[in-house]
Amino acid sequence: MTDLYFLILTAINIFVLGFMCVLVHLNETLNPKQTKRFFATFLLIGTISILELITILVDGAPKGFRIVNILSNYLGFGLTPAVPMLLVYALKCPNGVKGSLRVAFIVELIYVLLLTISLFAKGLVFYVDETNHYFRESGFFIYTAVYYAGMLYLMYHSLEMARMFQNRGRELMYGLTAFLALGTLAQILIPTLHITWLCVTLIAILYYLYCNEIWNQLDGLTGLLSQKSYLNRTLNLRPEDRMLIVLDLDDFKHINDTYGHLAGDRCLKEIADCMKKVYSNYGNCYRIGGDEFCVLLKKPEKETVCKEKFFWMMQKRRESVYFLPQISYGSAKLLGQEGIADTKARADQRMYENKREHKMNKQTYRG
Image 1 (cartoon, rainbow, N blue to C red):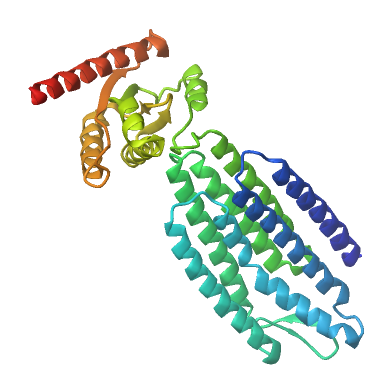
Image 2: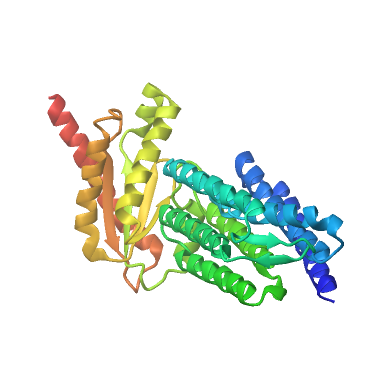
């Protein structure tokens, strides 16, 4: 009866994973690398699920199936840490993730080495006796530790991604990790449940949906929230949205005409990076036009500090990116009796005044 239950559970799991592979293939918002990595993740989870099914079906079978039992357990245990590694690999993360992936890969190699020793030495992770019966051994905690370390590794990089994307949905990551941890704990305490990989499948799907939703809200070039996201947010302003800051590049057309559009793109990325580093803890940053940016600030009392830090960072960037243009700045508090259009008009007015000051100073300097 247990075999039938697990067979049905695995069949459902494989069907869902197959459906997700088709969905990933049809998704045009992912770049080709992300498509391949998510596809590989779902394929890997399906492979491990099938390996676990094999171990259930052959456990206690005639001795001739002992080698199948051993290899299925070995491969299933060995491939498990690769799931969070693949999910992290699918992220749009900074280059720093490459270093952590190398470390994770080294840990995986050490873990696989211990598993290999377990094939020949009773008392490590698992053992299949001469009568073809599987047993957890005293070193099973190694597998558990690596499994939970993989979850923490995934959560860490997920939170890093949330920080890059201005901490949107950060709390969801804690919920997903807790769900997987509890599902795994139930499996450890009650081995006959066999729900671990169903939980992993659900997490991978939710993770994919979460990432896809986040990416759909972003401007593809700068990684800031898009104009569409800005328009949707300003249709439903929240009490914490208390100030609007607008930023506009001076003479941006001159940058494109003189240094080329790649240089122009570099300018936009540099500005977006500084905005995220300065403002993301206090509000949401948007690219709302070609060279126009804005921030919905939650704490107006932080405006002066953030402004000074932002322009200081931009000045430091000009030491290496000499063609970075000046930036005109304007701000206005959101008042309860006026709409966002009126607030933006007041912020724009101050920004244009700042732009005129830049032009006057430039003319004075030339004179």
